[in-house]
Image (cartoon, rainbow, N blue to C red; front, side, top):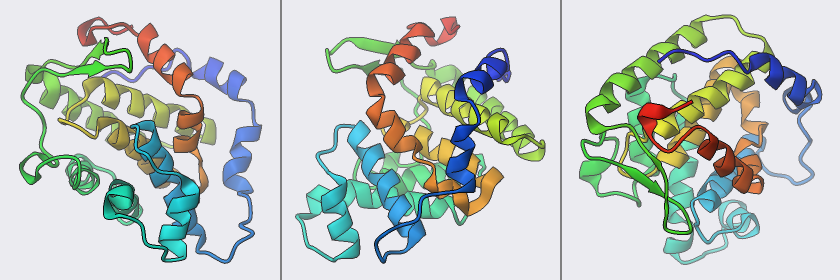
Length: 238
């Protein structure tokens, strides 16, 4: 998979320098809870909400930090994501670990036989209007393109990048992964996890405070609109 840098300069101009402050001066919590656990909870809730899960941060906060009991169905998928985020902050980013992370986050999404397993069937992504949003990679190229993607991951992890480069390539990896759509379900959750994982590999634990999941949720229409600009068919991606 060839790394695309055509938009890197434009990204740096449009992003400006202020966004780096998220890393260098993260907001202080005004509540007596663990910093890492708090931001992991934020990531888990908003990544779940993007997928249509009926959960809000206030309730999940009470569940996680105040031990308020809810029906298991209300929190279980966010809990699975929480465990997956814990996993990425304890393990290096590579293909085998990504499959393990998918197994964790898909505990209540897929049967065990499908968790962490690369699909061998065609895949279409359907939008809220029940129309095809895009056609994912054909089954015969999924494994090859995933391996190429993780060759890029390895190269980027071994390459010295400035902070803006890191954010750019983190989003780039997310985009390529979600277009391949290698699993039966949980691809969006895994793409966001991959993006955060790459940030963690480059920035360490301070990456936990980057609100990428919440930002995607708040700008979801723009996110899907920009994905559409790349084209419908995987083989014709621009």
